[in-house]
Image (cartoon, rainbow, N blue to C red; front, top):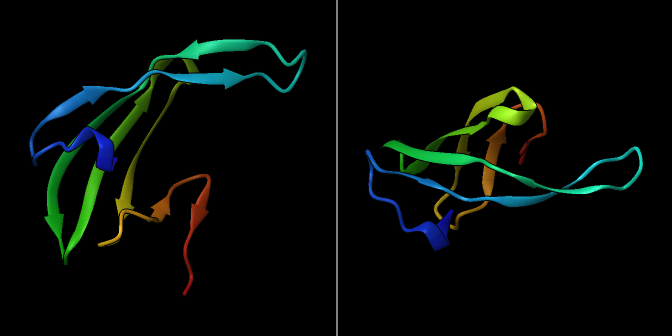
Length: 77
């Protein structure tokens, strides 16, 4: 997220390489990040990957490390 340098209220596309588990096919994955207002010193982004029918809000700490990435990871300490 840090490389995008998005101010609150801005959005950007950030395509990625996606490797399918079956067949190991590499595909381009269109994804977007929209930064929402910070809360309690944490940056928050609305993430969407339409091809995967997946969207969530990701919360990052002051260092840019994910605190909560729904469906993938939640930091406990």
